[in-house]
Length: 228
Ligand code: A5P
Image (tube, rainbow, N blue to C red; front, side, top):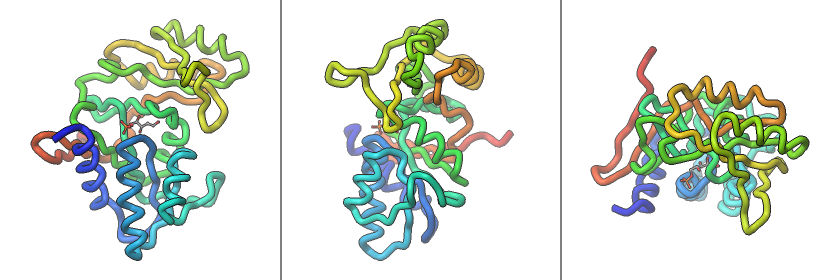
């Protein structure tokens, strides 16, 4: 099974986690995109879902599939389940997200959801976060270099670029990718980053997964956080 097949397997398995009808959060990224396709197929077959998309890209995809969507600004109530991807998952099911730059909307929708189902292929599973990925941090443009330099005290910083220009998020901000190496305490790092004025949000999702569906050579594995 290659990585794309694994992503599809995880995306399909997540459909079983949806309620029969209601409000659902639609993640961003290549794995979540496969899930949104599956939701589109269910809606076309008559399922009564309303979606809250986590990026402009996902909104466009869902609209094209005919999935009814709630407005970005308000009126969601409680989202029953959000299904989203991740870049890294550690042994406590903490996550790095934001490879696609949608981390802030993803974290808001995550926070507004009763359950958060994360779908990944097995290459994303690491003992500790930061082993292979940098932490994406969304930063306001105003005073940008100040926040970038302050983040530089927490790791090696790189301003994300696309086609030679600074990458701009859906909210009009920049992304700084902070390479830290293996992270001992993701919560402490998240707080330290968010303490810097100008930092909008980080891609560290600590204790935010209700279930992680991992697809790989042996099929599907379901990981749930240990009860405290
Ligand atoms: C989008 O900003 C991200 O958080 C994605 O959910 C994450 O990068 C995983 O993306 P893939 O499914 O494309 O690996």
